[in-house]
Image (cartoon, rainbow, N blue to C red):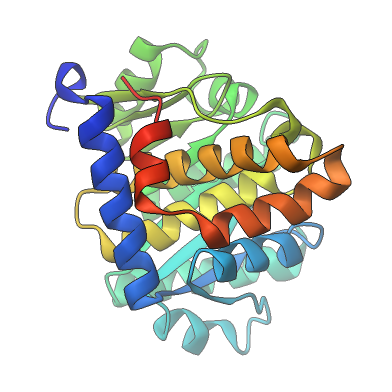
Length: 261
């Protein structure tokens, strides 16, 4: 996976299978600052993938929790004063302990102060990965989402970009990988994006190559979504089925079903 043209399905599928195996073998601790509606599902997704989640947002407690974690997720979903304060402490602690962290700038397209806070984190606190959708990308990058725009933004910020859409894109500004796994039902469940970002954080804890870790996480969640959709009758049963799919995913399934280029 050194260049986009060499990101063959087999090589990415095998790399992803290897990352999932290490994820389950090591069970990294991931601390998540996320919105109230996302906490339960995100924690269950991490547990199903073999990780250990923690979710406290208390400013008094968060420092030690982040210091004891192997990766951090910051999701700006419901961004009250307590979460803002917790985020400041968490990212400072992550910097002190050289922890990788993921920024999920939810709804920055709807609220200028939230967008300003996200830009401050990107400029001064340097997340390892920014995971965002098209509207959020436009708000932060000031540009229409495309392969070239994503690569330019990654180069400019020196941060790996995970741009979600019908096809997900992951780029460090030099390499770019597109991922076509997933299912429409994933958009009907709250916190699906947050769970995806949490799995990115988990993969960052055990895989040195940030692009490979980010691609693996999106392939894992996308394939789990496809498998879940085959067993679901709607969004409610889908939530249960994707949790089960994350738990039972195996290497051969990942290698066979990965849709990457």
